[in-house]
Image (cartoon, rainbow, N blue to C red; front, side, top):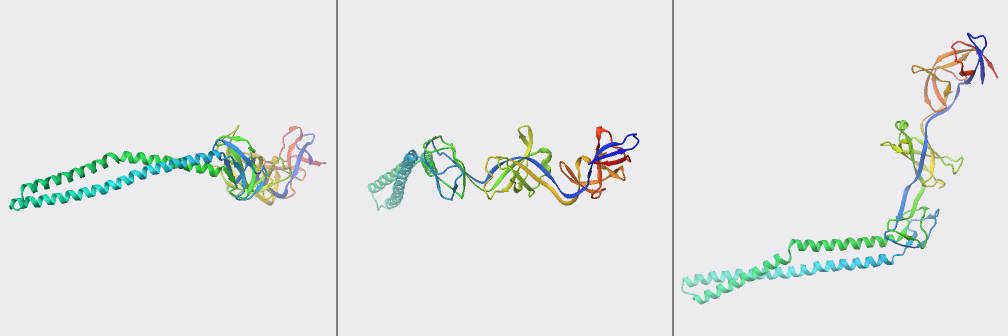
Length: 384
């Protein structure tokens, strides 16, 4: 609407004006984000090999347990067989010395019993010799028997000390551990040569095809449950403090014009970091995607609704003025503009919520034509 006014001027000045309206208003954070699956599965090549069969294609819906991709596992099976043979050999090397140790322990126990018996026999004969009841020859024979028994004990004790020392046992255990690790790794690689779906979902990335050669660690396939997706929103540093968990979110994607997906803020940033030329915090949002139209890894528009009110008085934002942080407007009353203090609450890029100072249908001047200033109490005339 256009308004003309005159006050202290010979010719009325023309100004633009608007009307205070009642309706909804919301304060939002607008930014960009990227879509990720909430439940995601990635398969990588366990060794360098060939893709034997790719049984699905990108976009396929798959069921839990379904076979998706098969690698050529001949080399993997050979590795597993060699590793198992090495493990069994290491375990056999440990078992044989243990059996010998047990036999030597038994021999040592027998030698010690024999030495004990020989010592008692010698002691008895020496007492009898003092009484004249045993000959010197019998005593010498008993002494020789004791010496022989002591030699046997020394022999078995030295054998244990030399052959079955702690370093030897540690070396044997290390061989077994190394062989076990090699076998476990081969078994794990063998299990990963057949890629099966861990849950119901959609194959959204398949960078390989049947017959392709892959290196260890190469990505084979990505699978996600896309009925609910996560959007990672990049929020500029000044807006990070306005975020709260549970705030409503609206998502748009240029590839599907006119469509809006909804959800809520799931986490707020714990830090701010560079993102291109911006400093941003990363907030995550859970978004409903029941029709599966929103795809992983795409860039989307994100609108986070910080606050919202319905059926309130609102005014176009550029009608608002500030004087030492005191807000006011130029209200048009009886063909004059009148400076009117106001209070406001919610605001966005275009409108503010008026909480006091104005009523519905009040007319407020925005600006004068030809950049002339608005003057309090100036006479005005409304024109089409």
